[in-house]
Length: 264
Image (cartoon, rainbow, N blue to C red; front, side):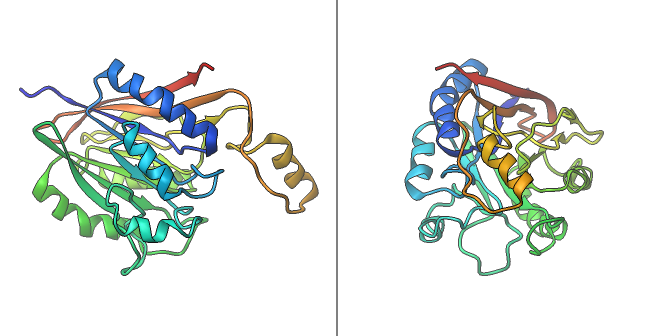
């Protein structure tokens, strides 16, 4: 029997603090847990809004294998040209046909292949194509290459993430949620063998309001006046999950939440 694959999924990287956490902690985590593949959501890397080509290249150099994203992927206009060339930086697959970039990719790790599919929810978000029907359309193609399939479900509503977990149970190795920046405590392997967590959490400043300086966020809530959000300063942590997958069948074997503080 082949050794299970160890896949590290890291939640939304927020601003410079999150980028620093990835740079320092990811190589250590890869070594400590003998990680075969690292999947990181990078859509908030540039000050909380989008990602630049330079940042995307740096993530790959630091040990990220596949980058996922969501509704903030287009916030930096220079990413549009870059994403058309870099298939390791994904945008949600259920954006309309003709959108630049790819919504899924298959990569090699040792003798095995792993497919990564990026989807985005529609509840309280952009009215894009149906993520459930898009998954139905794409999965048969991915399964021709590999049974190991990881899905990043970027969604606002916890219910929509849970619905996707149940919908894909037994058809993919894992469904991990991103976007809400608050790690959930519901990690489990679903009955048909899909590892699941509603939200991986955020990699960035912990003394914040979902990454933003708490005073700025409080002022917005209290005054209802617009202001410029900035990433918070102070303590930083990486949030995510370690997932073990049977390399032969693609069945999720275990999922463990991670919260790793960055010690300056």
